[in-house]
Image (cartoon, rainbow, N blue to C red; front, side):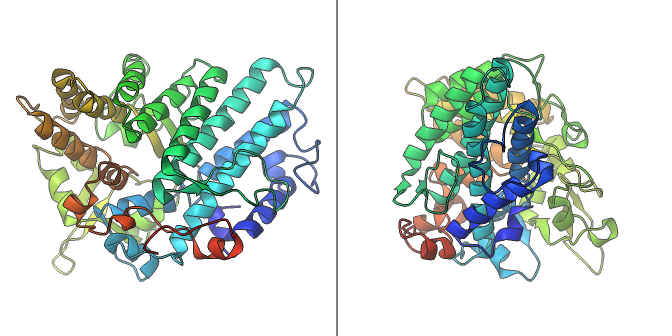
Length: 455
């Protein structure tokens, strides 16, 4: 069940329905229906633990999470994608007029907490299994993957909504978390780092681009440390990934997104024709089975088509204008008419740009190293290398590179918010709009929640 189908529930009612869902859906647990997740028979062996973990991954792919809405909210807010349909709750991200009753805001909140809850159930139930029913190596891997999923969910909640409740136990009743107050964004990031370090201690040292491994945890750690402005740790963890240059490589555009699970990917979510990534429907034209209500702006089209900026990344967009329909641009990151485009969560290009920024901003800047990392990404896109940049010019160049490299991924808006540049670049003068509101229904249902300022 995708998260956008459960919006009618309040925050607590959502948890009740999600508990019942977890125990009644055979495609998640492959078991007979149970009355409650607290029933010890819900996860009893390797098969049921693996099935519960698969359910947590499936929630990452929900239409309201990485399957569309969460990513869309970010790139619409970054103003390089425009909404041309009739639903004002999407347009609100373009003009930053979102309020607490925004449908998309609510669906994203619910979907991420559903994923968090699923990960907690896997951690709690699988950790309790004895070695006689689940060998230690399998238990560690399953629990480690769940810790990674929980860390990613908490990270996305923190960077999207700011102060949020940190839930680290499986939900049994609707009142389990009465009295749990919101934690600050910094506290959320600290919990994310703790979870990822735990995941590192449990996960295998393998390469699996579709599942969490030690490398996946390291890649997310580098990002979280960057957001936390811990430049040394961001550099260190990114370096670990970059050093694995036989496993992870900068793959030419458009090769990397024309293929699945390329060496560019550290972690990507796999979709199928029966479990679709909903992006394609909004991006593609009607001739290809879509609605084309999300489109690249003229500004990003110009940048991507500029050989000194976009280079081979021009493959991300096409000008399909006609005499009767001028300035008609289509984005092609999500191009499969079958709807099975991957969702790119962690790529090696990001690790180069994380390390570049960290090197440029740390107490004793390494501008030579930072420029080398930046130029590695530019060279891959057949864009001329840069030289002789001051520290401030180099930091700005890294920001601009992130914009074109991840044009239709959930990066640019969050980058501008974390660097406090959303006003200078996008004109979002009210800094309180740099985080999204807590959904109205949840505020009404949970007396412990406090709305973010200005909403």
